[in-house]
Length: 207
Image 1 (cartoon, rainbow, N blue to C red):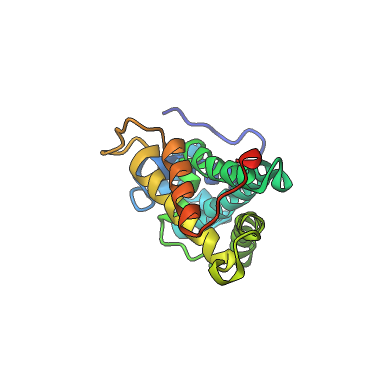
Image 2 (spheres, rainbow, N blue to C red):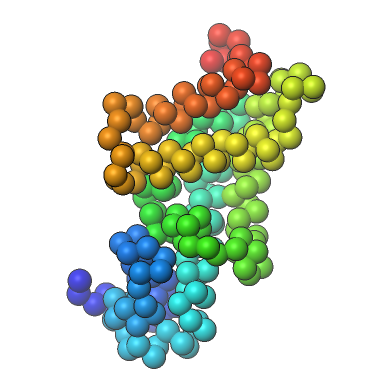
């Protein structure tokens, strides 16, 4: 691949983008900082003006990823419109869309071993994304009888785990990804099964 350079003088961001590409291609442990520098079109020493090492760049990729993720989830949720159920399903589809569009960021966020609390900025970005999912779960579960209603954070975590599993098995072109169903169909069906297990069946006019 030809060198991209950093024509606007933003070396830090050029390195983040190069690292995101390399993570998507080789995994979070499959490249060196020197390779990221080469792809960004700078010397091997240049990254150390902004980062202590490769792990620091991965943390920044994850931080930017969570910010993008939170923006996409919030847009999809759209304040619970047109119904809490449809808005919740929209956030699930947004999860899958994010994993497809930003694979390097997704891997840095969820598969690199980076702790969500590694830096204050990363913790803030992670919390913002989690807050959207929790708010969506809280609105949807409000009609479940209190004695059968899981905590909203647990509800959100269950659906996040389901979404992540579908991404890993079916949405990233990995072995085993062949299925007669789309990832979106699998996720929406899974959410439906989960909701029926909780005793939540929306009225016909809100289904």
